Image 1 (cartoon, each protein chain N blue to C red):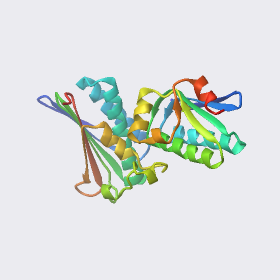
Image 2: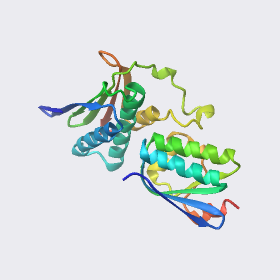
Image 3: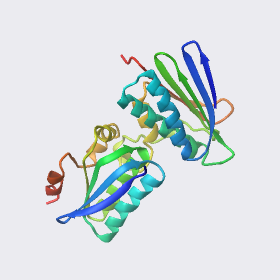
Image 4: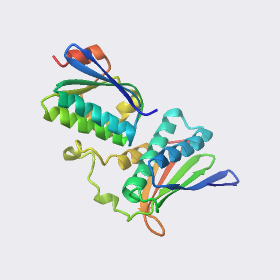
Length: 114
Length: 146
């Protein structure tokens, strides 16, 4: 299964729930388009929920970084929640844990925007 | 696809098209052999991802999706090791010329992490010119890691 993306509002925070595989091709493109669309709409507080992401490759990681840059350059924030051990390992290996603010708990992540 | 069994060594060789589907195919083939070797689930995942990254590299950067060029995959499974060789028919490149994806100035680059991840996930990683042209990457995972 490629990635499936849905969104919901928690107060003024837009939570993007991602599920499935985020790999080069359709999955990573959908990831990029979703983040850019929210940023273009003017959403400034984006929380990417990766709890149901089963697989993410370097292309998916690249799209997350690209999304982070887009949102940050627009004056917004993109944070992460629900990282599996495998995704945490990827962020460690790539040193991206120094870039992304990541949370285990969604409520805590939402509070961090305020 | 050819499969050859010699003693405790089994070798699979296949030639694949320069499409993204090839990354799925290569990963699936290697994961089947990794499971037979008895590697743990996390290790299998790492091997699969390393193979995916190197195969994508061969298709995208090596063969540049050229339908006339192939990806060459060899999987060798012994009692204690799994070795995967992925070759392309591209122009070749010097791995040392690639920007360091961990350098602070490169952290926000969109691409350039694939080979680093493959190296991190495997016990052995060697990238060299492929005999006859192109680039070949050799990945190995040992059952009993010290």
